[in-house]
Image 1: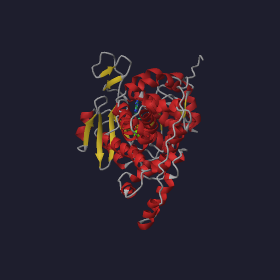
Image 2: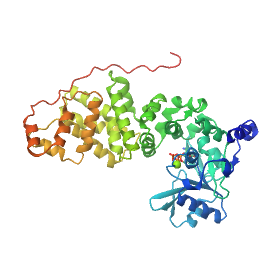
Image 3: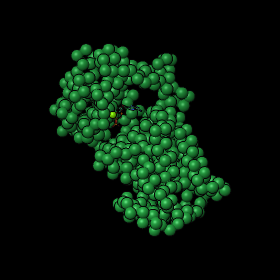
Image 4: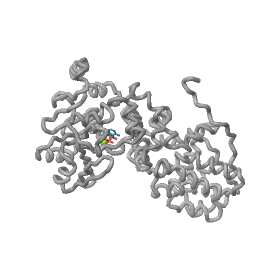
Length: 448
Ligand code: ATP
Ligand code: MG
C-alpha cells in the first residue's frame, strides 16, 4: 500500500523535493524500539513549545527493523535554548555546534535545524576547494533535510503524532535499497569529503547499492579526503572497519580508490609486492575482526591498525636490512617511520600506537624462545595479541617453521612440559626469505 502511495508522489516532480508526512499507521516505527532517553528529550522540547524530531540513522534503521546505534534529535530550539532545558547537557563542536544530553552512558545528540547560508554569512565558511569549514546557520525542517547527506538519512520522527517526515524518494530508496545523495553529488562531496566514506559505510552496513550519480564522482574525488582533519579520519576509519562488515567495506574502499588517501603506505605495498599474501593477510584480519564483533567479543583498534600497517612495516624493515642496518634496529626504524608517516593522515592516539608497536616488536621476539625467554614472552601483557597476530601471518601463508603451533602447544601445557619444549628447540629461527618485487602496477585509466 505504502509503495503505491509513494510512487504517486514521485510522479509529481514539483513535490519530489518536498517532505511528505507518513502517518503512524503507514510506517513500521513503534515507540518500543526507541530509547526512553531519546523520547524524554523529544517530549521536553515539545512541551517547551519547540519542534523536535528523531532524525537520521535511527529513523532509517527502525524502519529497516534494525537496532539503531544511537539516537539523534533535530529541533528548532537553539543550542542555548536546549542547554537551558537540560541540566545534563553541554554544547560541543565548532564546525557544527551541537548539544550532548547525557543519561548515564547514553548520549542523545541534539542539533538545531541547519539552514542554507549565503556567502557573506559569518557563521558559514567554505574553503577554496568548497570544503565546509563552519556551518552554524539555522533554518527550518525543510532546510535541514536538504543539508543531510543521503535521502535515506533525511527522515524525521515526531512524538507529537508519531508520523515520519521524509522525501518520497527517500522512502522509495529505503524500499529499493539504494544510497542516493541529496543534491549534486560532486558539490556535496567537495563540501564534506567524509560523505564518500559514509556512502561506502552504509552500502556495506545495510547491503544497499550506491546509485550511479552518487557513485560516479567518488574515485575522482577520493583524494579530497587528505584535506580532512586526521583525528576525524581516525574515527571514520574505525566506523568503516569496526562495524562488523569490515571485510566487505574494505573491498568497497578498494573499488572506490579510498585506500590510497587514507592508508597510502598500505596501498603502495599492496600494489607493488608481487604475491598477494599481504592482501590475504588484511582480508583474514578483517574477517576475524568481523567475526569477533558479530559474536560480541571485544576488538581493539590497536590490533586492527597493527594489521593494516604490517605490510608497510615489514617491507620497510626488509629495505633497511637490505641497506645494511642490523635486524632489530632495522625493524624499529621501520615501525617508527611507518607510524610517523601514517599519523599525518590518520591521527592514531598514543594509547593505540604504543600497543601496536608492542605487537610488531613481539613478532621479532616470538621466534627467540631459548633459555627462559619463552616464559618471559608468554608473561608479556601483549602476548595474546602478538600470538593472534602470528597465527594471522601463518594463516595468510607466511612460512614460519611451525612457530604458531609451537606457541599454541606451549600455552596448552605448563611446568616441566614447557621446559622440555624449550630444551628440544633447535636453534632454528625461521629464515626470512626475500621476496621479489616488481614496479608499481600501472593504473587502468578509462582512456588506456
Ligand atoms: P549510524 O549512526 O548508524 O552510523 P547515522 O546515519 O545515524 O548512521 P550519524 O553519524 O549518527 O549517522 O549521523 C546522524 C545523521 O546526521 C545522519 O543520518 C545524517 O542525516 C546526518 N549526517 C551525519 N553526517 C553527515 C554529513 N557528513 N553530511 C551531511 N549529513 C550528515
Ligand atoms: Mg546515528
